[in-house]
Image (cartoon, rainbow, N blue to C red; front, side, top):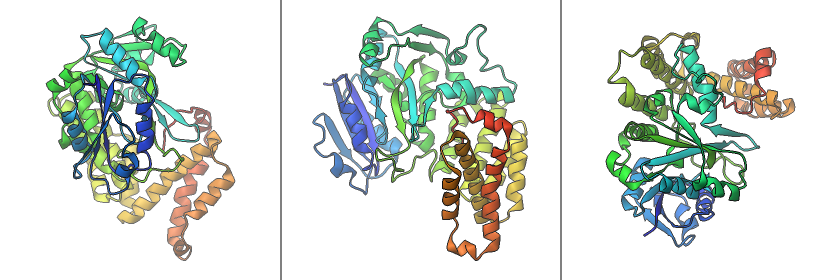
Amino acid sequence: MPLVSIVMPTYNRADTIERAIGSVQAQTFTDWELIVVDDGSTDDTVARIAGLEPRMRLIRQENRGFVGARNTGLSASTGRYLAFLDSDDEWLAHHLELAVAFLEAFPDEQFVVSELAEDFGQGRIVNHYRIETSEWYPAIARQLQSPGLDRRPGSDDDYLRVYDSREPIGDWGSEILKRAGIDEEKFVYSGDIYEKLRWGFLLAVNSLVIRKTAIEIVGLQNPTYNLAADYHYMGLLCRNFRANFLGLPTYVKHELTSSGELPASSHIATGTTSFIFGQDMLRSFDNLFWNERKDDPELSALRGIHLFGLAQAAVRHGERDAALRYLKEARRSGKGHYRMFALEGFVRCLPHAALTRMVYTNLNKGTYAGKQLLRGELSPLFLLRKMLGQVSLRSLYNNRALLFFLISYLYPVVSLLLSDELVAASAAASDLSG
């Protein structure tokens, strides 16, 4: 019986799954089984992996969504520890060995997670959850005038905004780090962080290694929360157990295939299902925090921010009426922000959903392209070719549509180039805007 059961749900990932399985095979820890649950793929995912690994078990089922597939894998697991990997991502070679070493050294701890590196291609990598704890969430806290993520006096470690303590990785893991070529001192952060999750994601299921006994306490993932089930599940774990976080990446989240192309199936949080993801995130937040504490002003304000993000996703997906509804609720739930009023005015000025979606999409593309220009990732000539390539022949005969396109695409580019503040800020390589 293997010590670790690895659960990998997959659906139409023929273009990425071999990379994911290869990262499991490359682990320096070898006492594992890999349970791949094919959730009704219609491409050649299954054919690609047949006979690829003798320690792999393949389970096929009709499409139930990734939560249903993951729960199928969990129910079939036999290991004392459980680990999770998406079929479009990969682990670094020391991931399992380091996590298992921690759990063996600290038998009272129920789970451990780690940083993950999000790879956007072209050398652009963002470290989670450093950017969340150093920039994103503290900025929201300052906006709400909340001390909830203040730094400790005398500390420059942003993880201690969230965790109660940190300790150097000791004898249980130092040799593993040395073999991995990591000479810099690394830390384990621990604490009861459930309330901190109100700010958003702080740990990921895909870097999680957990005792099976802990799963038996909290149960399987709840498919009711659909695409945001990971956020809800980590909330349940942190409500029941102390969190332990390794302050180094052991997991790589890929936005592209190994050949540098967009995967055939888009990511749930940023692709065609991002609006559904936003709705599920709101329901998860409500279940974990809001429903029982509606008089908490900070939770009300944070809910307003969730609603604003949901309104933005609604506009991107052509759901004009839903966007207006969420904006109205956002103003009631939290502090009104000029961006909420600006977005509402924008939506009301463009009465047709298709036109609203087109202009808003191009505004975002223009903003993102402008930041790429400032970072030196795009040349002006390439941007011009890219912009003209999106103007269809039909739109050339439709002056109004062409005018909307040019204004919505060029305005944010010019604004960014003329903004000293954004020029200075563009040096931050961790910017994820767009």
